[in-house]
Image (tube, rainbow, N blue to C red; front, side, top):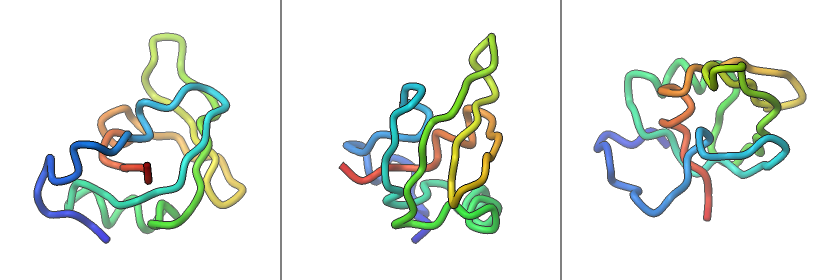
Length: 84
């Protein structure tokens, strides 16, 4: 599910907020334009993601999704919301 209203799920954490080694299950994607790109890369609601690493200055990050490593900018990671 791609949400069309930013802020509609304020209580949810985003992938951006995960610490290295933490994981979560994708709830929804909060940006319709970015959502299609993320869906194509395997960020599908119900899929588990794990924070793998951060660049020395914090951006980009890498996450593990569907047994592969995906590199994302922080603004992209912020649109991936996790189940509580």
